[in-house]
Amino acid sequence: MSLDKVTARGRIGEWSAGLASPWTEQQQADLAGQLVRLARFVEPHLVPDVPLEPERAQRYFLARTVAHLEDWLVMAAAHQFPVSSRSGAQVGLRSATQQELESLPGIGAELATDVRQRLAMRPPVRDLAALRAIRGIGSERVEQLQDTSYLDEPSAVLVSPAMWAFASMPGIPRALVLFETSDVSFVFGDANAIERRLPAAGAGSYERFSAFIAFVTERAEVSVSGAAGSLASEAVRWLNRHELRQKLLASTQKTTGALLVNDAYVEATKAAIEAATTSVSLMVFLGSASDGEAGRAPLPLVEALEAAANRPGVEVSVILDQDDDGVPYKSALINRALVKRLQAGAVQVKLDTKETLLHSKVLVVDRKVCVVGSHNWTRTSFAYTHELSVLLDNTVVAGAFQDRFDALWDTLPNLQ
Image 1: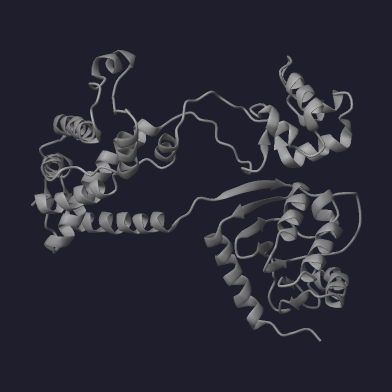
Image 2: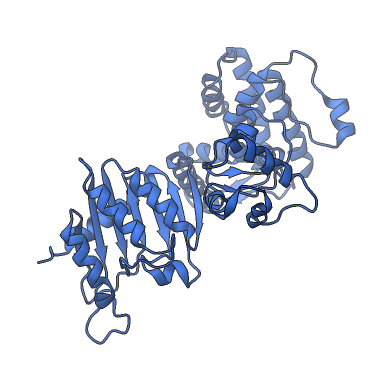
């Protein structure tokens, strides 16, 4: 038993349908034949130690064959492009354009030029604090830069939307778009091999994809062992994992976010609350409204909650912990002042049951943005301890956290 041409032809048809200029019937039939031949080397034997329905066996053969092709594409997509943990909204100063620098708060044209010149000097700047040496910039502007920018490590690359999409998540559909919209080809080897194997000018997506399958088949043929194969029971487990992975990948969406270290949490979270249009939901272990060091105290966050609750159409809800008598955390005592303050305004407040410790630290805004991590809303958390949280702009993730918040909220009594 092996991959049949009908099954292979179905997948080739799906790929063809995704192209602006689909392949001809004959081209699709030829590519299906190539997939069938490759499948014989990818999975030459399947031992029936358990029953395996023919339809499920065909799904397995097809999935293994496609996965083998995509392994080569993943290798081709591997690159050393620097990965950033920063939010897309933050500006990397070393790679920033003059216009991007000028748009940063308080910078303008003259200071933007000075910043670029300072960053070009040797030895290289390792800390944004070094920018205080620029005449006229001042400590306050440098502190603003720490919230809106960072020192990146850029590199020069040639990129296109189709190339970037493929490199971000390599697979056959995106490779085919790349083949169709550019003259990119798959080559395995060094610079000398590339010189010898460049395709003829005008080669279309069919010719380049066919050449790719032929190469992978040739490599598979010489590396396959006569004893190669799988048990049907192994095939079932592999297919179950593969189909679950495909389902999860299909449900994912691109996420932007930012790492919030220590008091960086304050400005990022405050901005998220200020942008709310429908809802703000916060559950946190400890909270206070103390006003300590400027920019580090929780007071600006509390004021942002109160302001949001007074905007038309915005519902603000907060859940705090309250420990039982004798518990050493004293959350009921610490949270008392904040509860009273929020109750006096338009913010809805509930307390977790005394029998259960609420240790979550989650903020959700409009079921779209969420902040989750280790930060409590206390002066200690922002000024004296090492804390780490992440802001994510993703409706699926934020929606899941909101559902968890709502489920807990519905179980808790209203405060008297």
